[in-house]
Image 1: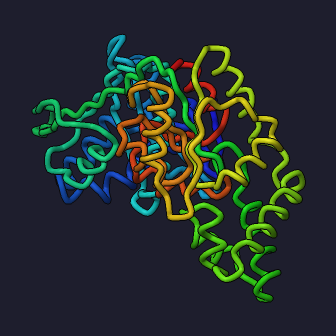
Image 2: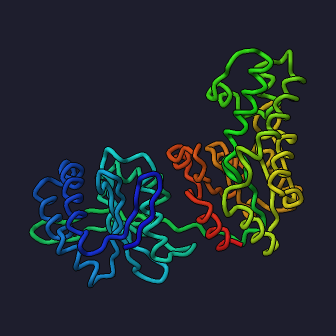
Image 3: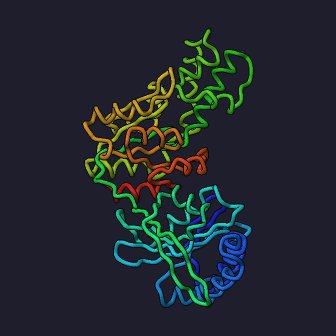
Length: 388
């Protein structure tokens, strides 16, 4: 069995003895979703013909399909079946998630894992068939990057027929990447709680009242100068002094190093002559403290820090490209917020959503449709190694 786990959700490749449970799940999903579209008689016929445990076992043993399922402590709640049709085409034969579990990124993660398990490379086409009247699911596939490529009507026996759209997507063909640009807080390191603690120290010390982490985070966007100015403009200089002092004092305790594996990624990219950049909302003074703590001074070829006036990550990305003399398609931006992905898209740079921080909102990141949404730094290393 192949299995990965994250936050209590597991994705497993199903062994033959697990297929009856997948078949039971298929029955629940099909009867709820497809009965209004094709009628109960055809639903029961298709479940028996294509989704019974025996049919699934035959598909695995004789037709080359592999079944994957997503589960939590309550059991399975989604599954898919995939196989290679040709060297450059993957068939997504089945892809279903229970209605109450949709919209949280688990289905997308299941699909990505299944396609990756087949060894699909950039440029591979992923093909599926979907009932032309299944508007809700067609909309989901469009959001996942699929487009209608044709139509298919087929006789499946017993007087029933399928009436489908053929949909396809091509896995991104990353050009040889010459420049990798990173966000900092939540991307290079788990440092957001450090920022909040330093702000609270400065604000509480000057104003004599407690401010919550939520209050502090609500001011994020501008650099730290903007946050201090939002709380105590009349004490700006002293507030900045307290913030930066406390930020430096706490750094070794609250955030002593980057995420595990991140410095190895920087070293790999440097060895392959890839230029590195930073575009962050942090101010330059706190960023300088962080780079010193991590021993990263001199690693990055271009740095664009935040502004007290507010976020301008599209501008920062353009300035890094101009400084390093690259076109947008020659770079990739890695960030942990939906704003990072949208800024990347505005500039035309491929985006990787970083979802390995405790503060990452996977659902909101998935809604921005980055080129890749990755849950671990190890996955990032693998992707970048393929791109450079």
